Image 1 (cartoon, rainbow, N blue to C red):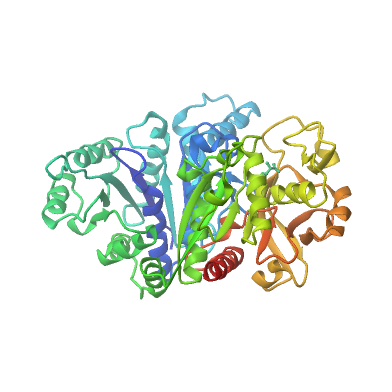
Image 2: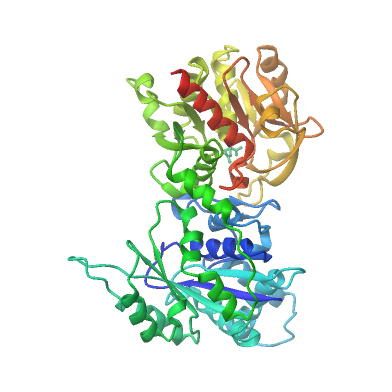
Length: 536
Ligand code: GLN
């Protein structure tokens, strides 16, 4: 069985196509089908790695080291579909591949054109995933809005695949907006136009997911059905949910999954949704409450640390706790008259996330110091671990000038630095330690207790490392090296001695956390923060 589901968006962007696609994936998995997810991004960047978080939110990293769009993070949270380089397609990748073939003379004198050469390359990439062994259903989300110039070749490729597979094997799901104007009147016109636009490129949607604030009445759905040639059962009300993890259940109640299976001629199977119901129940009625302070840059930009926020919520779910996120711009801590006691009042745990560039670093160092000196659980992720080490060198070793050579070229104590062999590399793309690699955990650490095992695989995305020649002095003064690479050559994690809970990791655990299975470190961090809360 090889089935394709294309998910597109109309009217405007940011309607939650990624959550819709992920929720369909979750429902298909709940019915026992093997699912794959593909994201298409119509920008010219080859990957998301060189984009600022201000441009496109978080960069999500896969096991094989691809730097992708944050929607892959949603796929990873909602489904167990494996994610790799193959699951993220950008215009840049497609054109690069075609132009490289042209330069190599592979087109044998032909004129190389968008149709068929670009569209063929897009189809080939989709099929590499969809036709891999044992896959039942592949969900392909096409980024952008139908009507944008950039997405035209991708829509044409989708149209061709629907035609070639046949409409019983490949379907179209279109996500649109149904706004209400002053007085509360519901407007269907934008959706009607959005569907026309999709029909103009030769795609008749099979399913419409109508985004709105409130659930839509049957009358509105019937009206939209009659104007768009979409069967009434395929017109789904995708109203705002208190938590994104409720979306699969909202779709299920409206029998979206059964409808999709019927459309694709697939015999339905029992749906096992107990675990999603449990997640939603805990999110809505948690037994406990905890407040986590996150100290970093880009705090005003919700999407920049998307996976960190979600992983914290997952840690809450695993502890039957609601998690309140208090986002603190590290710059605030740098003011001469900053009152840290006030800023951290009522905070049960402090997290310093990943980041690049010098701005805000001193504030993060102050946050780590505050956590260490006040017995507050501390979780440092990537840059957050480096901060932990710099702070320790300055305030415990007394190396007042300690720094990372990323932020100070003149420091007399570069406790975080590039490895010798990295120093001459000038290019930006492709110079980082990227993707999954193995670490070995030291017995008796918080790390070991959280994971319950000695060896782990976690994803990296960084250039700098704890300087090995400083390791002995740090350890002498108590810093615990809680994990290293298997050969011991790189520090992967550290902890403060005698602290309620503190872990800094050089990798990004947030990418592997799921609502149905919180990452062990996030679970342990929230548990420690709850313990602190109970004492405070
Ligand atoms: N800027 C640091 C480095 O490159 C940390 C990177 C990160 O937090 N992802 O090593």
